[in-house]
Every structure is written in C-alpha cells, then in structure tokens.
Amino acid sequence: MQSLFRQVPSIDKLLRHPQAVEFLQQFAHTAVVDALRTLLTEARSFIQQQHQLPDYLANESTLFAALHERLNQTHQPNMRPVFNLTGTVLHTNLGRSLWSEKAIEAASDAMRHNVALEFDLAQGSRSHRDNYISALMQRLVGVEATCVVNNNAAAVLLMLATFAAGKEVIVSRGELVEIGGAFRIPDIMKQAGCTLVEVGTTNRTHLKDYRQAITENTAFLMKVHTSNYHIEGFTSSVSEAELVELGKEFGLPVISDLGSGSLTDMQALGLPAEPMVQEKVAAGVDLVSFSGDKLLGGPQAGIIVGKKALIDQLQAHPLKRVLRCDKVILSGLEVTLQSYLTPEKLTQTLPTLALLTQSVETLTQKAEQLRAVLCKRLDSRYELQIEPSLAQIGSGALPSEKLPSVALTISAESQADLLALENQFKQLPNPIIGRFAQQKFWLDLRSVAQFESLLAMLETAELK
Ligand SMILES: *Cc1c(COP(=O)(O)O)cnc(C)c1O
Image (cartoon, rainbow, N blue to C red):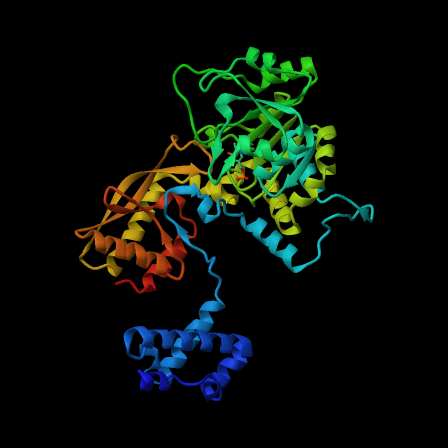
C-alpha cells in the first residue's frame, strides 16, 4: 500500500507539466488546483479501499484526460436543456412554459443593456416598472390596473397581506386546494396573518353560506379556482357574479385566484375549457390573479389585475418591494402579452399553445421519425412501437382532461435493460425525460419542443 500511495504524484510536480500549463491558461490557477486536489484525494481513498491504483493514474495522459474532464464538468451548467417527452406540457419540475422567440429576444436585450424599466421616455421622468404590463392588460382585458410579482403564490400572499391581515377571509370549503409544491390556501392565509372562514361543505356551497359568515371583521370574499381536481355528482358552487352582488351589498371586495387562467378561449382552440381572465373581470371581480408561466405561455410571474384603488394599495405594501419582478422577466412578460394582440397567430408565436394544439397526425409523423432514428441506435433487446397516448396540459390544469397524443413506446425482455436505457437517456448531452407505464418506457410526442434537435442529437448519440 505504501508503494501505491507513493505513486500518487504531487500537485506541485503536476502543475509544472506542459499539459497543466495549458490548462492553467484556460481555466486559471484556482480551478486547476481545486480539480487536481480533488482527483488526488479521490485516488488516495480509492487506494485505501481497493488496494490498487485508480485507472486514471495509469500514466500522465490518463491523469490529464481525467483532469480535463473534471474542469469541463465544473464549467458546464447543470441546469441544462432537457427534452420533455413526459406527455405533460406544462411540467413544473421541467420549468413549465417555453417563451416565444420574441420574448427571448426582448429578455436577452434586457440582460445586455440598460432599459427604461422605471423611466418614462416621453416625460423624461421616473415611472413605475409595472406600467407597460398595466397598459397592455388594460387593452387586453379591460382592467384599470395591474400589479406584477414573482409568481401567483406571491400574488395571493400579497393580496391577503394587504387587505386581510388580522381580518377574516371567506372561502368555500370545496376550494381549499393544495397546488403541487406545497402551496395550500390555508397555509398562505396563516402566513398573511388572516383568519380563514370556511363555508359550505366539500361538495356544496351556497350563497347563503357566504352571507351568514360575513361579520364586521370580514376583509373580502375569495374564490379559488380548483384547477387540479374536480368533484362530480351532487355539487354546487357560487359563481363570481353572485359573489360580486353579495359583496356590493356589504361593501366587500371579491378576489379570485384563477391559478392558470387564460387570456384566450381554450375551447376555440380545441382544448379543455379554462376560465378566462376577461370573464372574471366582466363579472365584476375586484382582483383576479394568475400565473405567467402556465397557460399564458410566458415567464414565471404572478399577475394581479383589477380595480385601480385596490392595485394602488398592493403597490404600496412593503411586501410588493420584496416580491417584484426584475427587468428580464418584465420584458419577457411584456412581449408575451403583446402576442395576445394578434390572437390569430397565438398557436404559432407561443410554444406552449403550439405544442398543445398539434394534431394527432403531426404527432404520428414525429413518432415515426423518432422511431426511425432510434431503430438505428438501439439493438435487438429493445422493441419500439407507436401507440396512442394521453397527454395533459399540466401545472394545475385538470389532470382528468386528457389530450389525445401519440407515443413511441420502448419495451424489453428484461426490466434491467429498460432501466439501463432510461438511464442512458438521462445521461445524454440534453437528457431525454419520458415516463414508465405498463412495463414500457413512453416517449410522448405532445410535450417535446425543438424536435429537430432531438433527432439530431440521437443521430450521433452514444447509446449501448
Ligand atoms: C398554480 C396555482 C397557484 C400557484 O401559482 P404559481 O405561479 O405556481 O406560484 C395558485 N393557485 C392556483 C389555483 C394555482 O393553480
């Protein structure tokens, strides 16, 4: 063992090697020494455990190859692009919506340059960072004003903290939802310091339930869109319009958390219905909040639209300063919203809507192309088949509302072979993410963007 340990070279000696000098120029001293130290520490513990040298200590060239790989690895982003073949288009774990090309351009301009973020170019004076979005929302949905924050959870928190701290908020029991990732309406209420007053039962809530719950201490009436679940059978809920009537009677605002919400009619695009922001505004709801990176198809943001007097109060709350968006997000959001001024082209401009509205024929053609490439890359252990599949919108859209789709399924005699393949897919330069079902690995074509790049990567990928 001692002789093995003596074969581990010293850092000083290695640093004088011409190969190291080259790396020093490229990566500089700190990174090279760090990587060398890690490699040599690993080598010593390998010797301790295995009583032999690790392969990379065979000679100088293997050692420097290992060092180069390490250095490259640490300079590569870990959060790299993946191909989403899960069948869930808005996949929270995979970053939800993809931006339009124009939004990407605007955002990268904003990164590279100073922008008129809080500067009125016409007046030459200071302005507000939400003004551009506010003007667009006024045009698109006819609201008085808009407030933009980090995400919709933040939007709900800000509305509650501003209007209901130390007060009561009335919500139907059937709407006390948990949205994935630990967003629970009752928890947000607690954080905002308000008291939740639950009314009705899980399946039925009536207007009189709200009426009876109103006290001197009521701050507002709240509706939460139960985006991710659905109760069937003996059910009843109170519409926004009815709540608005009741609110007027008692001088109470009505607030609606729409979750995804949409600015365009999803049914007209052949998709499951989703409540529209315009409808809620038209029904007289005082404040409506929704996400920027769900069906809207833009950056992560929480958008609150509604009455100016209330929006002004949100803007003045100290939490707004904590939750505000930066220039990159706001410029991406502005350009995303501008796309809605040309609704005829939404399914071309917004990648999310483009994916969701692809025809089954298009998906079948893609499945055939994918099969042709994979056939060449995989050996006879694997069997490929094109099958009908059910995709979903994701991110709080109803999971029961499936979208017809097409998948390439891969099966193998041995489960181990199938797992090994899934693992190889995950190791690719741009990992492929699919899903297991019925002992097969499913690659659903509905959710994958940049399809040509996927084919190109697979053409040259090293798959065993
Ligand atoms: C998704 C969702 C939220 C949370 O929105 P984020 O933008 O993810 O913070 C809140 N409420 C409802 C009803 C939702 O569907």
